[in-house]
Image (cartoon, rainbow, N blue to C red):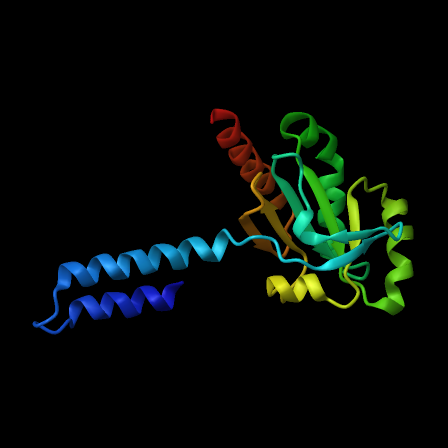
Length: 188
């Protein structure tokens, strides 16, 4: 987002005198608004995955009855991912009671390691809906390079928040964003 801003700022500083600057400013402001809005409010891509029980799931149909939900990308071998999902697990019941939020945990473990996902989930007692992305189709559709990667989807299916990596306590920022989205929904 930085590059387009600098480009347009330079354009306004060095605009030729024969150009109607008011019209151009309105045009470029509209373009910036569209670029900014589209980078965060993209709809969910349509990818076919399976859950840990073998049921087929279309990702563009993921929802939470009009309430926000979280998609958390992880892998069995990723220690920060497991710490994050454990930390959320400790407060998940409270989060659900307060906001109704739902979590989809998406494993990016490759096919040869996919059999490790369900035992890990069971061992940790995670009560999330766990989806399997062994070919990285959903990960690639979102352009994710690093895990853990978390996003919050608003009640309309738009991406409202993204975060990569994990540090202890980051789950507090996550629930604050969910609360903000829940509050906006309840105020309408």
